[in-house]
Length: 286
Ligand code: HH2
Image (cartoon, rainbow, N blue to C red):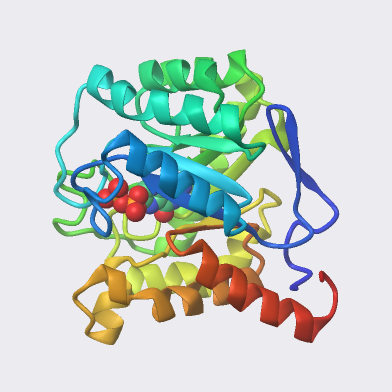
């Protein structure tokens, strides 16, 4: 794999020290009725648990559990409702599997309950803008994902404008990461994420992916979530997110080759197959 990555280092996430000598796969588990690609499929806790089991069996290095869709145009739900979706699933996964669990939420109340339920990573798509989320990160030893989002999900795709998307996103992520370090979050717990599709046009997403080495050069492990997203549909004229797996694999492979440390994907089995073949050819991590 690329030496641009964080090879030889680890990402500390609670009791886990995740080795970054190969790209890690973060499997998506949306316990929502309305996510853009799989909304409703795992809303039922039994179905959610079964899917979590499947992700773990297929080789997910991390399972990212979310209870609120942040697709463009989505409305916020109450923290109580969000917690009641994610906490039981997280608790059951933590009981049954030894795999790091991540909570995908922008609400500190929800994250706090999920830490008690066994989460080891805080994945905040709002990039730790909320001081209460920062305080929570300081108070625990979880890994954190600082993501870039322009504005709020409700309006972020209205007309996103940047002068230079790559440097603006990079500078924002570094500013937030340094803010977290100064608040007391150790550097080896922090990962950054350009937030593909969060207030970005297709051209912006392409520029960010093309410029990934600049994000990797910041020294923080980089998470990329391109899986099944709208820009893949636009590039390939594929309206159905479930049929965007081949495009998603291309985006994941490109990202890994250019130094991404964590790929956030819906299709763990397919991604594992693609990476397995790649690794066998390259011969350095099988
Ligand atoms: N994308 C989504 C949600 N959370 N977290 C990170 N760190 N990076 C991402 O790119 C990212 C994320 C959106 O995808 P999904 O969860 O599949 O959809 P929805 O928000 O509709 O539930």
